[in-house]
Length: 320
Image (tube, rainbow, N blue to C red; front, side):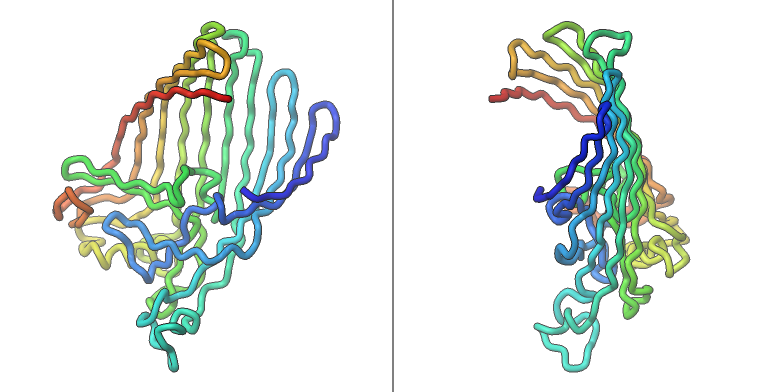
């Protein structure tokens, strides 16, 4: 990530930093133009615009023998592309295939941001080198500082039998006025907490127990078209008839994860590890609807339900 930072050391382990980050590289999930529709599992079409302004970041940190404490924050501009991507969407006088998008206009940008508090406690009674790490975060329009992966938008779509659970991760949504919306960007809210305990059995073996809880919220209600949730549900219902009859629409979701990791380091800079992870997705959707998911799943009626998945990984890591 391209960035520029200034750090000041105040003494006694206290330091502060302020900087500018290239937000285009990492710090985006998605900004959905709802006029472009939603996928079968509720994912929008990303309509983020270009990189207009860098993220403004800062932190205050205290490092001591007992561990560390840090407060950090970021400001992130949510910048949209045009209301229409390509010709043929909104009729505009004098429009051509090359000019329709620009003439359709775009919503004004909005600034979002995130804050985080982090704590590490060392020298705990369980053994030398053991530690506990905790952090809590909150974001509005800056969701990737709460729930993130290497992908642009770490969303979820999980099927089991005739049930489905999904969660669309975004920094915001917008629905142009010509399609029944208010035309402005509605920022998404997210919050979460993470923690880990690391224990060293001996100089060669160690284990970690870790977990997290995250939530993504779209403000408003499904019947209020001036809100993010109302505009999202309007578009979701276009592909899933029966809203208010066979199902209730609510795109909010929660994710809980719990995992355990064991490492063996036979020599310096060489580590073998095995990890097991449980992921639990809680959907706010209720009832059932017809879905046409990607193959090999058939078009059928699926009931909305919370979902679980289990995963494991083994790794060999050599540092040079």
